[in-house]
Length: 202
Image (cartoon, rainbow, N blue to C red; front, side):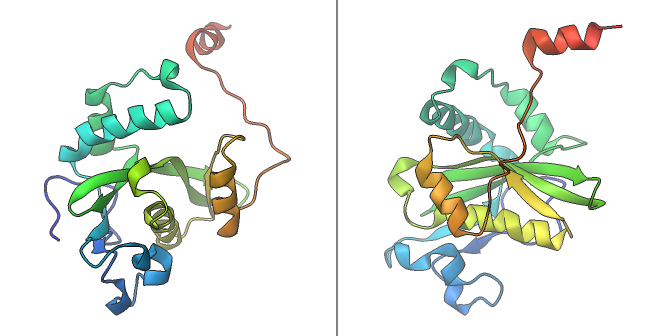
């Protein structure tokens, strides 16, 4: 399936677009990784890089994700800003889209971070989401492992993400892939008025 529209200026070194159900004939992306057997013979599922035309769908997915995580009250989405950050002159985030029969049904959004101890970049997975009707078919796994493949291709030292502590299903899924929690670390955040106040301190 050909790419349509403008894709992120960062995703260049790996061709991400591929059909999931046809992966038994692909050397690079195996059906085991992408759960091809979870789809019927009449379903065409694939992972592809996001295009600028996907921004409205990404906005929809982000609202759905916030609702699932009980965080809708924190959302202040700006479509123009998201479009700029994905597809502007200096993109700072990247996204992959999961499709079923040509329709977007989920996404992964990630960006580059850095480990000074390793002296190597890493990828931080900010969001991973599949619509409820399409869960349990391997698409979430496909998205996450696609980001992992990009991490390896870019010689990253690690790939990281956060998960809400009540989401035991997701935690079990991540652990089944060999991921481990960073129990010795506590995440801190400055935002809103606290960030503005800190920035104004002498």
